[in-house]
Length: 127
Image (cartoon, rainbow, N blue to C red; front, side):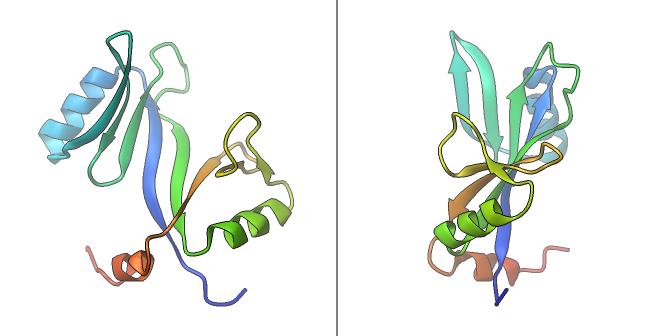
């Protein structure tokens, strides 16, 4: 196992009304928008500072549920190999190699850390 560490970079959740959700997180929690993705002028996804990604799912009965977790790892290739060797974990079909799915359906998106970033982040006590 060794000394490994990782960091939850973002959590993506599906929402029925993305405009309402965006306004809520901005107004009530003070989160600021860092990026957005639109299609034909309609907001599809929005990323907020603090690690939240909202994904529009207006007709999805699972709205408000998890979509995927973005995880920063120290060694991308080693982490990916170890995950895929773990029973029940498989790559996401039709997605780049950084996407894997766990047996219960939870999806992980992996990112390579910038030098020393994980340890610096994990050293901060936020509460």
